[in-house]
Length: 112
Length: 147
Image 1: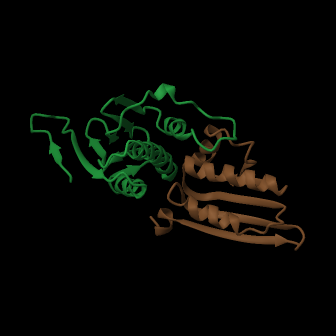
Image 2: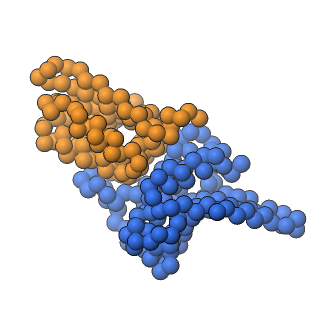
Image 3: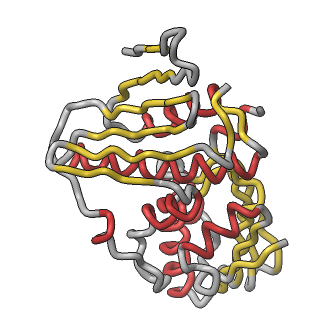
C-alpha cells in the first residue's frame, strides 16, 4: 500500500485564457477532516476570475463528511463569482458518498 | 494500553479481541484507520475505503462528543475476531438517540451526513448509547476479515 494513500496530495492546473481561466483540482489520497484545511487553502489560491472548476476525486481513498462540507463551501464560493463547479468520481465508494450525501446534483457530480 | 484475551481450549470459536485507547483528537482518526488497515484483510480496495469512511465518521462523532463535554477521557477502539469480526468504537460521552439525528439531503448545509454515510457503508452498524457513553459496532462481514 503506497504512502500516498494515507495523506492528501493536491494537483491544480489552470488553463483557458487570462480573462476566462478554467481550473482543475485533483485530490489524491485521504480527503477527510484532517486534510480539508489544505484543500480549503488551495481553493482560495484559485484565480478570482475563474469561470469553471473541476474537482477530480477519482484518486481519493477516503471522502468523509468533512470533505463534503469543504466541497459545499467551495460551491458557495464559486457561486459568488458565477463560476461553474463540476466534480468527477470513478470508484463505487466515491459515488455512494455523493449519493448518500445528497450532493450529486448540487456539486455537479459525474462518473468517469 | 492493549489487552488480548483468548478463549480456552474448550472454546471452539476462539473468540478474541484487542483494544486500544486513543486521545480524543482528530489525529486519532488516522491512527485508528492505520490500525484497522494493519489487522484487517479487505475483500478489495473499494471495500476498504467504504469501511474506513464509516469508521472515520463514527470515530469523528466520538471525538466530537468528548470535546463537547470537555472530557479528557480516551476513545476506545476494540477489534473483536473469531466467530464474528467486528470493530467497535467506544466513547464516554453522554449518549444520544441515533434515530433522532436528522438526515440532511438538501445539498446546502455543511453538516449532518456522518451517520448516514456510516450506515450506508456498514449495513449492520449498531449503536448502543446511554448516559455514560456510546458503543458503535461495525461488523466486518462482507468487507473483510481480521487476519
